[in-house]
Length: 401
Image (cartoon, rainbow, N blue to C red; front, side, top):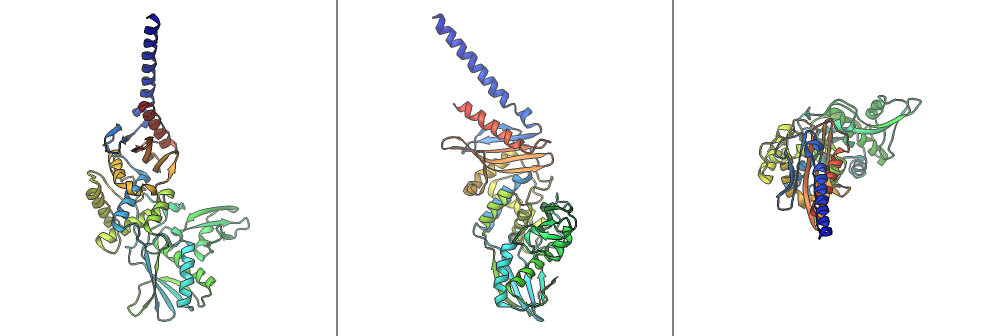
């Protein structure tokens, strides 16, 4: 009897210690510092919640919302279409569509097609009128970082270039598929000698547009086109004849997967602005994108009391709650396969100075998935979001045993 009583007491003590340990591991006020969290079951019932209805800066997890609204309103199979026209004086006219995927490989394919239709080109004129000029995305700056590239209706390589400045001062391309152009050579002078880096080429939409034209001109030369191939920006005259419609080789679903994996701010905001055009017509403006996103998230997801400033998460004016993010994730489940998987979390990360976020899904038990959102608005290390996520997962798995 005495042995049995001792065993029972030791078991009670063990369980008390274990529960205390779990409670300490889930000291959410300490763990989150300034932030909120929500973990919920598939039916939406909460398992863990802390400040989950308060609004925080989401950083790049906002891209889940941009992706959702784009896929719902444009469709997974949507492709951007860039129009090409032949005009007088051997002029090739281009009407940009906001396609964010006009990288070197895509521009090379376009050139190979165009040279068969127009082998002699003296001038390339780009019509940027689908987007309003001088669109400013809140949160971007004038740095050389590629994530500060300016949006525009026609842009090559995200308005950025991988460049190398040799020790003798000469500038060359740091990627074999991309030729050097006058603009990229000029931008490379900002690099230290003996260094290489991918940099933002300019702080205006005109620079990105001009660079896209210069890249296309180089690929046309390589494809055998003759002529001066001078690049400018201008309107398409009524007399110009359409010769080619180029559909992006990637559909929106494929673009979205890359966007979520690499967190490309330029792509997110090109899509954000395209949503505004889809709903309210051209030209694209930030205000139209905001209205389109707000309408989508209100009507399709049920969000209330939130603010969308832009589509990438760069702006600190963006405000959402953990509960709104898990509500979105419930609707996002048909597109869950587009999320990157790291350490067992199918999720999107977000980071700004003083902002650390993570939202997605993880398996609590076999065939039992949960949705979660972690929004920390304090200065912590870049990987802190995963530290919090692992602590939550370990606690919940231990508690369920």
